Picture 1 (cartoon, rainbow, N blue to C red):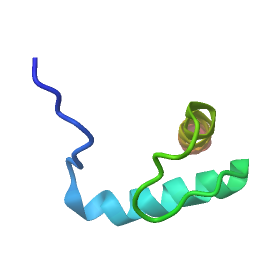
Picture 2 (cartoon, rainbow, N blue to C red):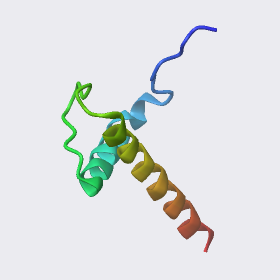
Picture 3 (cartoon, helix red, strand yellow):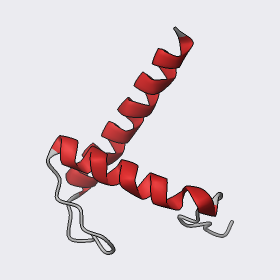
Length: 65
């Protein structure tokens, strides 16, 4: 099976996702740059992704109330 990579399924959402990622990175103290961030550790990248998921779950739960 060929890898699909990190393609954006909805191109109009890319800018919003990038802002969301930068916001999550600031909240956990990770210094993301525009473009290449391959010098970050797996822990740093994981903390950004984890923060994004946490915020999405909180938003979903808030919407249920």
